Image (cartoon, rainbow over all chains, first blue to last red):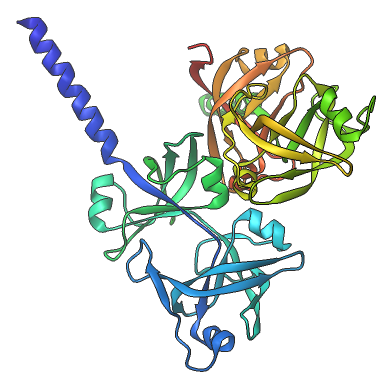
Length: 218
Length: 218
């Protein structure tokens, strides 16, 4: 009888561990290079009163991949068919990987999206016009989007800094990942292609959140 | 007097911690895509009796970057000016990053150098000939080279699996890194460009070895 009780206890412990492990898992996605345009730049590139055409919805509600593609022109090369994300934003921002930045010949700093002061300059070209982006080309700092419910489950809060272990073929732990909580977000960590290829990310791969005790406001 | 003793003790503890931290540091280098050729393939590509021409020594003693450059031809693209490392080896091996493999259109598996059975096929072209590599294109598993003296200092042994925290602008911890000990090695961890760009590696950056208790033979 004692052995049976012990077996049951061990089984319950294992189930609990599995549950705890599952609880901390988040989906990871790779984001390619892309452009967010201001409405003023949309009109410069495509014509007066032009509106971006949604092709498909992205994982974050309201965000879409546009039908429109653009070229990025840097000192060292031109990249064609660059994705444009909609809807139009307050200001134009180009999100690159380090590989892209080196290829284009620009020094794009690591920044949180939206924080584009003193960042790299590039030309953006459509079929009919070229716009000079004075600043706005960045390497986007990785972060996790989640709802308040996700945050409660993961035991983290908005602005918290966590590490994320990518459970992939070539596993790495990404340090200093910002948690962003908003009712409209969908649980997701975005990596750029350098980070995704570094861990050999495949579709459906997940990461495990590891608390660090740090906060963006520290 | 008691306060002074305490201060001294704290100072010594801090110095000890700094020393311990320093002790675990290793230099990290990025390796671009490159080709190791067998002597048979050297002769097919450059002519009978041809010997590779050393341009400069690499960090591992005896290894050199050759003057010769080659093209890699895959189903989706051609990559020019690919580095050739010498001296010639027993068999030809192409080391790519995942970004390279996707660009060329081949599925290169993650392998330890030398372990090329059932790996990807590519064409290798010089100015005068094209050789079909039936297998041998891999993504090389990261590892650390070190001497027995380094191993003793770092408290690791040949075949041990460690994690390495890259102390870089965008810090990541690389898991499952193999330790290779040999008298002729020089202390160094090699990353491919996906891994180097993922952590925004800059020249002179170091990593910190973290023991895992795992061994390649486990």
